[in-house]
Amino acid sequence: MINMAARVALRAYPPSFRERYGRELEALVEDAGAGPRAVADLLIGALRAWLRPVMPRESAERRRRRMQASIATTWVTWCAALYALPMLHFVLSEEPGLAPDLVWQLLDIAQYAMYGAGLILLVGGLTLLAETSRTGNRTAWRPLVALLPTLPTWLIAPLLLAFASIDPIDRISYLIGALAVLGPAAFLITMAVTPAVAVTRCRPSAKVLRLLALSGVAVALAVTTTAIAAAALTMNTVYTTHLTAMPLLAVTIAASTAALVSSGRGAKAALHKEHPVDLGGDV
Image 1 (spheres, rainbow, N blue to C red):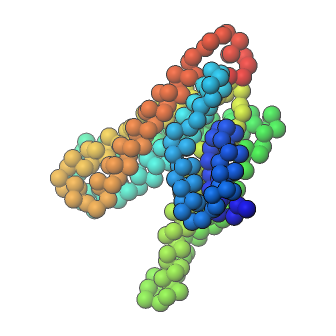
Image 2: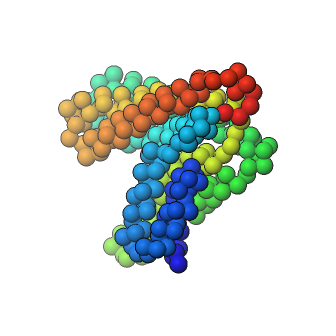
Image 3: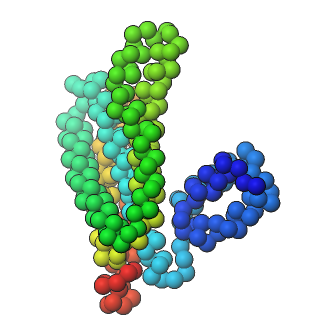
């Protein structure tokens, strides 16, 4: 008998993995048991499966999965870079007069580039939503329901922080302050993950999927501008010792690298045409 924690861990695997190995993995869990260690191993395996998606042998379906994985990865990296932008502004605001003009200019470029990439993602998301609604594949968007529990904490976070500051020593105020911090953090993480999961469940047409995969290259370049701005910030000795400067650099470089590699693979799959009929039908 599989407990609830193990079922959640099994559901955390990508759809492509579950289609191929889901029954075998479930049978293995039933035979070996679903203790805390087994659940932890399942969650680690799910993370690895998302980072290295299983691609089918069929060329057309393999390219479809590659493009979907690329689109999902690009969205996650854009969210990571977008969340890093306010922190970069915060680091600069502590010593604004000591920052070279080049750092401010690079940060402004990164901000405009990320907002432009956001518009590209918004148009792509609406196109994908319209496509899946037309084909009746609305169940693909069920993961977005996970946003509902964390959204209220994001909206009322300023009020919670204001209430917690009245008496910081009080235990209740401490718990409310923790909720005001952890709630929005959970919302941001869910906002980055759940749309990526929804994209991997969709079955859009080849035309829409190719368009989204190719537009991911522009988004990856926007993410790269944030990494460049973070690098310019940390190269300045005034900010190198800041507690958040180096972690921000690591996050933005990781996001930029993942976005460039994944979007490049997705664009390669989108531009690959075995037969002319691929343009009009499914990939």
